Amino acid sequence: MSRGRPVIGTATGGLTEIIDDGRTGYLVPSDNPSAIAEKLLLFQNQRNLVAEMGARALEKCKAFFDETLITNQVFEVYRSLAN
Image (cartoon, rainbow, N blue to C red; front, side, top):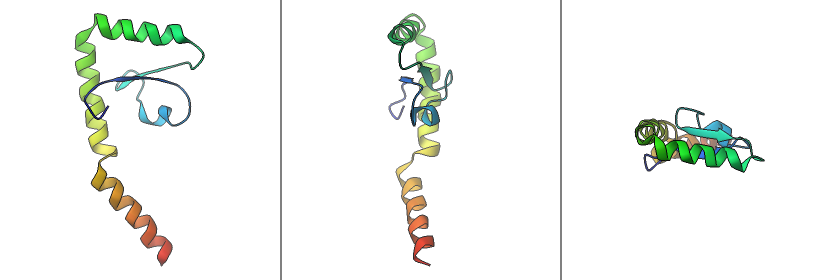
């Protein structure tokens, strides 16, 4: 996502919080390899979809996972714990 590419991940754990299904990539069932193949073929056949979703993925990374933003948030947590 940080490289401007959509991702395909399994709908488990933290990935469900990172990937916006249908917007920044696709979430598929973890026990369904055919679903992964289906999404790969979709990206292969619809190159414009890769560009559109990739742009949204990059925007999300910049908005939520920026190094400075995360550093400041962690610093504030430590500051609140110290007080």
